[in-house]
Length: 108
Image (cartoon, rainbow, N blue to C red; front, side, top):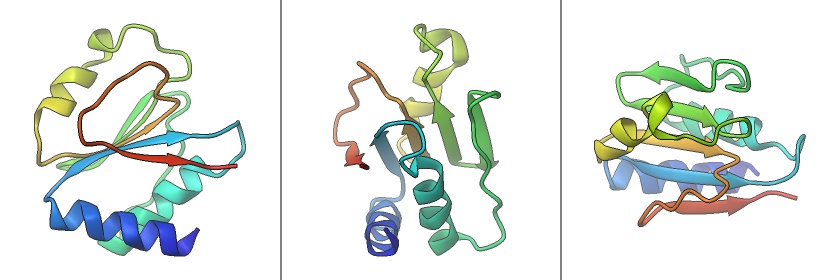
């Protein structure tokens, strides 16, 4: 998982932002992977699960979302976050959300 985290962090840095869609069953390690990716970018940021707050904002442009219980993406401001191409957005349980040029990662 560390190699995948490092590779994804490099891609996000190179592109000055981007979206990562994370697929996998509960407990597959989605939040852990996000934590590892963010550590490659800023070791001071502490990543926590966005299960209850739905969206965690870690820095000016780093967001971590959990859409497991969300059907209306607009109501939580997700489209506004995605609109800024300099944002780094990690989305767990993306369901039917389509994001052009997103990095898609499936964990088993």
